[in-house]
Length: 206
Ligand SMILES: [Fe+2]
Ligand SMILES: [Fe+2]
Image (cartoon, rainbow, N blue to C red; front, side, top):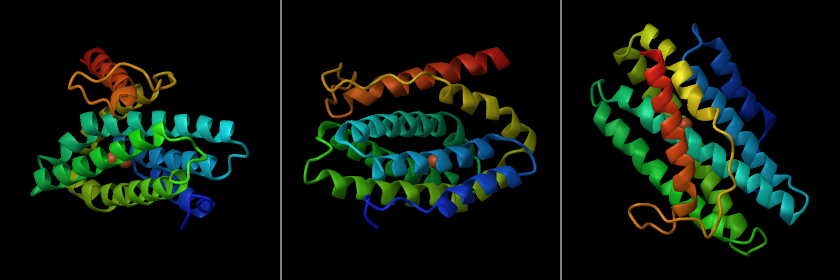
């Protein structure tokens, strides 16, 4: 399905319903709510009326996705490593996240009316949705087997701390990352701030 067609409202509600149906409000609820929000942000790109609106919607998506995947890398994926064959699951999810980040960085550099924009954005949305489903269907059950309900609940505010960072507009000529990766440069700052927020939240909890 092309990015020109928004996702159905049912697809979005499904994640929210799963979040609300959890017995406790925990880190997995946060991830589910985020998945719904990410779909909403893709829809804002699909329905943007002008190129300026589309660029605005792209920046909002970049912010959300980078914060979300960073929070998962810091808080969620480490949990699955204690499960049977959990390392393998964590590595797969990280690989998918790196691929999405590279696609996002390419998109950030394109004009929203570039001939390739819609095709790449469609590819990104398909990949991100498939990735989110893999987390929900295959990583969550492993985490729930390996990690106590109390721990999952205690990680909810830590995950949320990353979400609370204010959006900054990624700048195309911004600083490059420490590894000299020019392509990912504009998104590195968002990830750094999300990691800092998580670190601070962990310190406060202890
Ligand atoms: Fe993820
Ligand atoms: Fe996710």
